[in-house]
Amino acid sequence: MKILKLEIDKKLAGKSLEKILRENLGLSRREVSRAKFQPKGICIDGKRQRITYRPSVGQNLEVCLAEMQEEKSRVKPCAGKLEILYEDRDLLVVEKQGGIPCHPGRGHYEDSLGNRVADYLQKQGEGGVVRAVGRLDKDTAGLMVYAKNQMAAARLSAQKQDGRFQKIYYALAKGKLEQREGDITASIALMPGDKLKMQIHPQGKTACTRYEVLKERENCTLVKCRIFTGRTHQIRVHMAGIGHPLLGDVLYGDGQNPVFDGLALYAGKAEFYQPFTQEKIVLWGRDVKRWGIQRYFR
Image: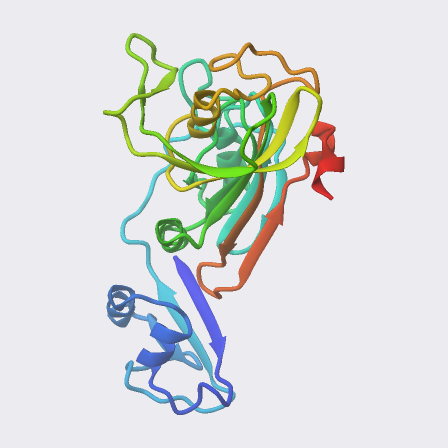
């Protein structure tokens, strides 16, 4: 159940509730229609009202949005440390460490980040349903965004589709790149006979990665990446494909990382909009210092 509250000010007074719900609270026609038939779906000062009602200054609007269907979490709640970067009534943003899988899977049914999030949400009275907006590879560190309800999840997914939800990745690539910036557009497919490794293949799924060189070191380059498609291992495959595999990449490189332990890929920044207030949220990860490359982020 999701409850939205709004105090009517001078700008909203005199408008129909339907217009306020659509333009100010961002509800879809379907959500407005569903709310109309809830016993306390659309209320002004605690009294149910039609969507044609025009409220006055100082009155309080309350909208009750029921979940489309009752959800049951398939992720087992398991206690574990969470680094929470941001939280509100609809969202939870945490920082994942490299080496921890996002979701339960083979060999990691109880020690994934999803297990920890399910445990946290359950203890907070949020039901324990894990709704991840995107994912990160096991060896990739960085920001993970979770929605606490169906409506928030749907809105964030829509933001990903229209480009308003963005993650910025930072990586240390082997060698020095000839071009300071560019787009890598190469289709990606699963490597035959390998369940984990991907490859660039003309018959694969379309993939596009934009990169920008930030700093050069003697034997590696710090690059900023943005992906326009979410293919498995996309940045790793694309960077290796242009001859610059990421440091610490055991699948697409030599696995060596002289700067720090692990894969040198970090989802260090996230930009999106609060699903209901439309406030822009910009978050940076805390792992920059742990990486030992904070001097490059000035």
